[in-house]
Image (cartoon, rainbow, N blue to C red; front, side, top):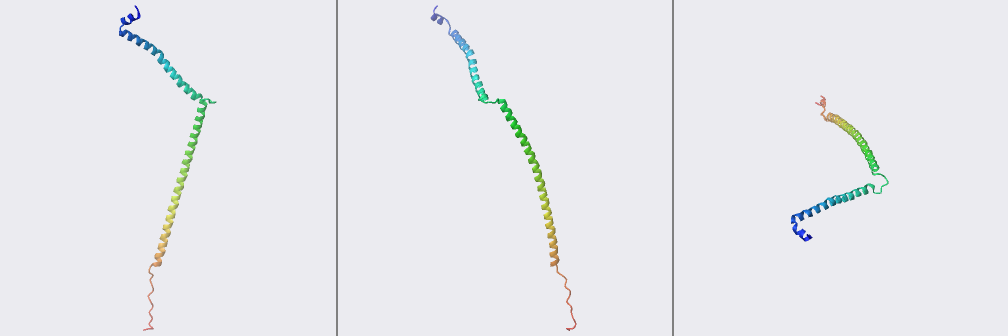
Length: 138
């Protein structure tokens, strides 16, 4: 039985099954190998970013940045407190200025009322004494 007879004796379904088996076997070996290679490239890129020829460890750099951020946060808290205190002082000063303005208006009103009363007294018609009549002239 030569190869040609074997080929003709096998049905197309058997051939198709064998082809699928070969493709499956290659796929089982090739697909994980492909993903492992791709994953290796990704890991290498991450290692390059982490290492990146630094003289210090990434963890130490992150700790230093974290400490700096905490310092800035505490400074901001202090600034917020300072601003709140300053705002309280300004509100108190504004209320004092408004009170002083009210006192000035009241003083101006009182002085105006006093001036008005004085002017009213000066302009008020005064009773003139009746002219004296003498009998000599009659």
